[in-house]
Length: 249
Image (cartoon, rainbow, N blue to C red; front, side, top):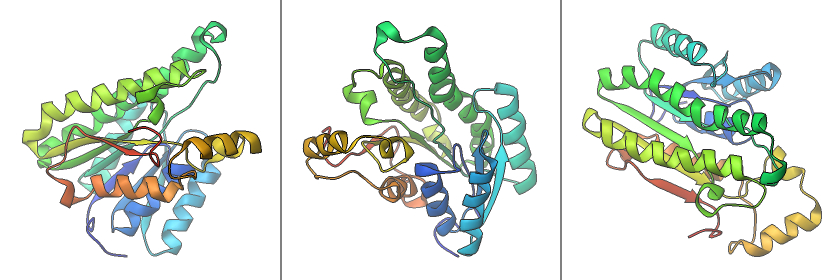
């Protein structure tokens, strides 16, 4: 494989399946050496690595908890020491907790914020030093349409994803002069394990309210991430790219 990311090193958190796997394959297809982060599902992570290698790309799996500051620091340090550089960070790892606020437990709230928002903080802080030193970097954070428009039963998830937007814009201002861009991609409904669990009635409802009339594929989200992670996107920073079929404008 060869392409616009030849020679670059990328880390994708939560890269073992779904949108994360599609992003890994997209970046590897452009020539990057991709580190596939996962927390517990080692088999899925190795399957992602196999898919990349079978296609002629380069990928390795690396387990660490994005919510654990020290584990993240050591992991990022290991990647930089092993590869000599770090060019792209995609903060994709995420969890959700469904339920109305009055039924939401404090530990569920903390779990979602710890992974979806604090995890972005840990990973970015640990990775950005190498990027600033090299005066080049692409950071792409996965947020969500619900971080902009809200959704009943997802107060924790929406709050965390809205926080990612604020984090993205603020950090973009801090490091733009160092050649490092920080952007976000906000998917709408995407064909993943989460949406696969929806009933047929729910799927019909959602496709009816989406102007495009369908749910997105993981590859369509990965394409947006791939663009923002590429050298040609060097004058784009602090932006949120919506991939939602017109659900939110």
